Image 1 (cartoon, rainbow, N blue to C red):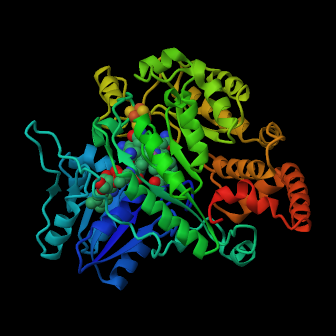
Image 2 (image 1 turned 45 degrees about the horizontal axis):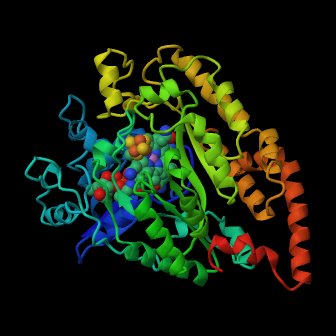
Length: 522
Ligand code: B12
Ligand code: SF4
């Protein structure tokens, strides 16, 4: 049987990084079946085009995965496929939290023939075999233990994802026309892939707005160090072979949740020479440890995603995230910046203690820190979270099924001290000011003493991150953005060219050997 795994596009960004679930399920598919992957973010298709594709390929089963944010879109694709007679199974966080909605048992239309609840590592092979026999059941869920809780996959052993042979062309961040030219530079930039790798699952912290503790459980499971190192070595070999670059996104919710184990993993990566540039999510409280931060640097860590949420401790207490202290954020970022590690700092507006002016207050703090990539969202009650239950009980949900009429940056409930409209305006202001050409210039200049490679990567990252809020999917939008930032771009280009010429003359290619080598395929 031919199986299509499909991820709907998010409507905002393009092919930033493939979704791990597709590769994982592909690797877990029993032999004798062929699996095709289509990510709508990399390969945009309408419902009709997807149906035509499925017919042309003779696909017998479609698996669709979606977060809450994309689920309405996922349902539209599922509806079109089912109308064409193709069975659809849905999985992922949203349908796990709202299975009745997908199966049409909550008063609305039915969208899926079957749903896979929770982690599907063990149920996926059963789903495939049932579908091949034409005996798909409606609900697949993990086995239960004696206490009635889901039995979680151990991650030992962990399936081998054959990154070295997979066709990743749709996910390269380098536009096709630039590939031949860029593959000649330094360590080679003919391809650039950001690849998701997990080293563990689960988070015990239970922040009020988060689905992770409910979905993956509070018991944490890790892959073996050997299995992670082996995967990195294969990725590194691929980058070298293609004269391209690979960066890794460790998608664990908190890579340093068990500091002892993280240090041992990072040491093993260093010892095996498996360093690739990487980014990971780590909470601020775990970044007090100097030795950990040294190891992050030495093992290839370049960017750390920190869920800072708010600069107001009262808000942090409200959402059960007191363990993360706003008063420490500056020191944590300084500690990282001393090792040329920068942070993606994530904030949530619309918490109950927020008032108008929250954007300016937050930006004042941010500007007193080393430069980073701030991102701003709004407090969103995802189904099955403690936040959802609290707001529902208090009768505060204005759009209890906000995902079915998804509206970007429009809250589903009013915070206590500001309106939904004010929260929207604060969010817009924060994005506008944080990624203005002036702010981009100042951010790059604030690290003027660092190697040019860090400043270039900082600017490039800033241009991409702006696109999370302001859609930047056309060539025209990009040209405008480049023109607006021309001052900073020209000044870096001039300096970069000078550095490159000097290093060529000295026959000691500084750009390729210094920090650039740490980007990977050295
Ligand atoms: C990586 C990641 C991202 C990446 C996504 C890109 C990418 N290519 O992966 C980035 C950083 C861009 C991102 C952004 C966001 N994310 Co995010 N992200 C994650 C994260 C950390 C890892 C996802 C992952 O790969 N997990 C590992 C895989 C193995 O698990 P899985 O995807 O759940 O898949 C398993 C099962 O669910 C199941 N399954 C999944 N799909 C399917 C499909 C079928 C057919 C079947 C049978 C089974 C199945 O099988 C898999 C194996 O067991 C998760 C948290 C987490 N730990 O999962 C949050 C998470 C998915 N993100 C979340 C959110 C809210 C967001 C944002 C909306 C945040 C924001 N406010 O902006 C944005 C959305 C951005 C956008 N416009 O797309 C929430 C989603 C909650 C929900 N109910 O929807 C999560 C769960 C985190 C949380 N705090 O609650 N995210
Ligand atoms: S927000 Fe992060 S730290 Fe908090 S429960 Fe979710 S994954 Fe854990």
